Amino acid sequence: MDHDTANAITGENPFALFDAWFAEARKSELNDPEAVALATATPDAAPSVRMVLMKDHGPQLGEHGGFVFYTNGHSRKGGELHANPQAAMLFHWKSLRRQIRIEGTIAEVDPAMADAYFASRSRDSQLGAIASEQSAPMGSRAEFLGRIAKVTATHLVGKVPRPPHWTGFCLTPKAFEFWMDRPFRLHERRRFERAAGGGWTSGLLYP
Image 1 (cartoon, helix red, strand yellow):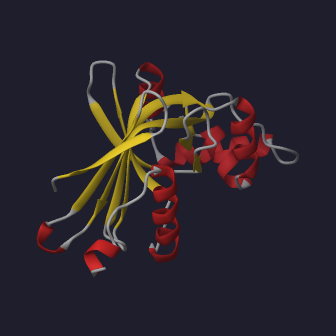
Image 2 (image 1 turned 180 degrees about the horizontal axis):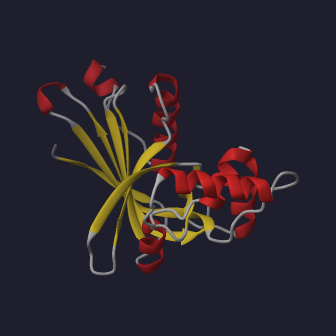
């Protein structure tokens, strides 16, 4: 078996392939291998994209599996996800020269799941989530620091409650595309699509 064939994108389960690549990225990426570009769109189809951190993933999430991230539901992305519950993700691991695109539908996670993750965050991150009106105009940095000081004084002791608008979203994949760098830009691409009767179909794409 030659080197090219040995490193081909193979397998029938895109979640298993994602796990294998993600495990390699956790060893080789300098910072935040779980960082992912999240693309959303407004109801009139204007796109927007930003980086978020994937906090959970796998076939056990929901009926068809999923990828979970957390955010302020009142933020721009939160508003877009509520109005148009579709999104796309892009993981790009430069150290591996690989990327994975994921397309699917969006649903808010169960409140108990959001509570559990919020409780796992550092206290400073919890207080910052309460103080920040994410995506809203801000007069100055001092204004934000003043809000953090006020929130901190309110929660000097005891558990910091999760704000009801701070929540998680789960992207349920309809399609995956795995991309691997090859010499001379003869890259390898394999697309997986969820079959109507369950399972996945897959095939290669021209680079």
